[in-house]
Amino acid sequence: MPARSRRITRIGIALLACGSPLGSFAAQPLEAGKQAPSTGETLGGGERGTWGPVITWGLPFRPQVPIHAVLTPVRNLLTGRASGRVFTFGYYGVPDHYLWNPATGQFQALENIYPTVMLRECGFATPPSDANLFCSGHSVLPDGRVFITGGNLDAQDLDCPDMPADRGAGHNHGHGSYAFAGARFAHVFDPLKLGTASEWVRTSDMRDGRWYPCNTALGDGRVLVTSGLGECSFCETAARNMPVTYTNEDLEIYTPQVGGLGTWQVVGTRDIPLYPFMWLMPTGQIFYGGPGADSSIYNVPPLNGSWNFLAWSGYPYRGGGSFVGVPGQPFKIMVIGGGCCGPNSTNTVEMIDLAQANPQWQSMNPLAIGREYADATILPDKTIFVSGGRRNTWDNVIGDAVFRAEMYDPQATTPGGPVWQNAGNAARPRMYHSTALLLPDGSVWTGGGTAEGPHDNQASAEIYRPDYVTAVRPVISSLPLKVGYDQFFTVSSPNAASIRSVVLVRPGSSTHGLNMEQRLVELAFTAAPGGLNVRAPLNGNYAPPGYYMLFIVDSNRVPSVSQMVKLRAVQCPDCPADMNCDGFVTVGDIGGFVAAITNPASYAATFPDCDIANADMNGDGVVSVGDISGFVQELLGL
Image 1 (cartoon, one colour):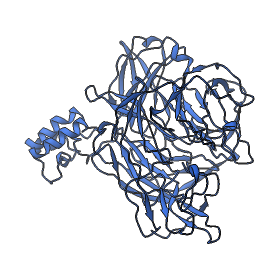
Image 2 (cartoon, rainbow, N blue to C red; image 1 turned 90 degrees about the vertical axis):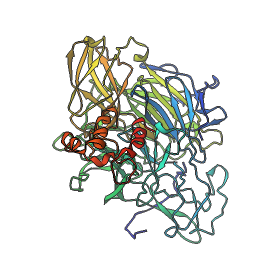
Image 3 (cartoon, one colour; image 1 turned 180 degrees about the horizontal axis):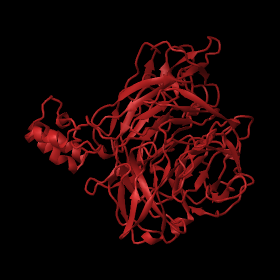
Image 4 (cartoon, rainbow, N blue to C red; image 1 turned 120 degrees about the horizontal axis):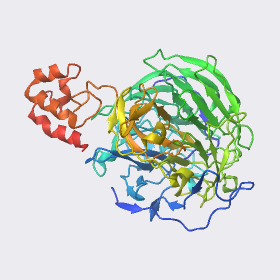
């Protein structure tokens, strides 16, 4: 391993240890008994919605604590339309991964890639390919596959032979010779290839391990990966045998490949806290907004790769805080809650407007209840829903759970910004390792949460339904499967005359209070016969390529149920089976593929910017009828 300057991070703080298809099973409600809300919280329903029943998460005999959750687009091969499924994975020591259909309540158990015992000696042996995806980074690639970086290198550290081998009850004490270290592995989960050898693919490795990293989708389909604990831990002294682990300072960019493993490029180095707050700006730059107090702009390549200091936050360090782009305002960022200084989490909220000449953090009206490791979820009516978390930053016990959810409406006008409204109480504690996602119907799925007690881990989920879910809602009759940037497209609706807003919401990717993917983009539109003439985002810096939920919202701020649309990736001159270079593999490529085989000159004349080698599906260097089978399989997503 290259010798590089790295900061050493002691993992003596709160234990970071995070955790063949079996058919489909429906979610089951749990018993009616509820945990009592924390002292001082308001009981009963909230002002803006209601909570549904608690459901077990996973198969009846194999429940899971969903600490990683991604709203995954799953494409129907007959219609081409994608729908959102909740994909959960990664609880420590539990091999189960699930795909849940919110429309039917059905679970599908996925392939197990949890490792066998791994032994290693740092710097001398590369661990095997299996990985524990616990505390990894994740995002959705432009083609809908879930991209997962790092995780826990669950390996016995041979550099610490004097430490007891027993990891202790519940892995809470006596972690023995097991390292707090990150895996360099990266994996891709493809929901179109369930039950095949390609359901999970280990892509190209990163240069070093990452545990608690962040994935940030870029405007051209690449992914910037930052932070995380590195691959090796070391014994501080023979007497204490305290494992210490450095932070991976690599700024690393992954370029996905259709039909390939993708490539990595290290573009710089910077010491960044774990699970950092990173935001793609419309300028193509990356804003770093925490959890540290120092905020900076990164000129991500192909810009010059420099960092520019921007501003200091008014709060010293928001460990376990929430971070969200203000819906429909791509230059405004909010940070919410967290903790650093003493046992109590903070209720402070700050906002920064990156469009200003000299952006500075501004204090906003605070939460009613301070909380750490809460989840902030964007709703299609442009409100922000904050759920879960804990009051105490030093312990993780049930008594410190925050049950009350709160709602923030950026469009309200009050001194200091909108006041947070009561959104009712959840039934179960959603603290450390809890997650939340916006669902296609506009409701919010919340799940997971762990605590110190042996029976306090939450293998369950709840759904919060804002008031608009039960209102008379506008309807989307039809819209295209995919659209290109800065293009106009038609959304058909019988309610077109009452529509006041059209928004795209990127599917969420949530863990540890951090949602690495969500953003709401407001679209310009005009009336059209039978619907709306809508203009797509200007480019990928406003909305990175991939799948989005499209909602239409009426004059009463009631959104429709969404339909998914795919924003076109940049043209791809070297993508297998993409014969017209539109960034997709569809029936529109059939004509080009036939021409490439039968009349190469005609193909070159018709598609002058494309590469005829895209038709070489079997990799033999020749475009011929021998490539037909591979083309058909790629077209069908097999």
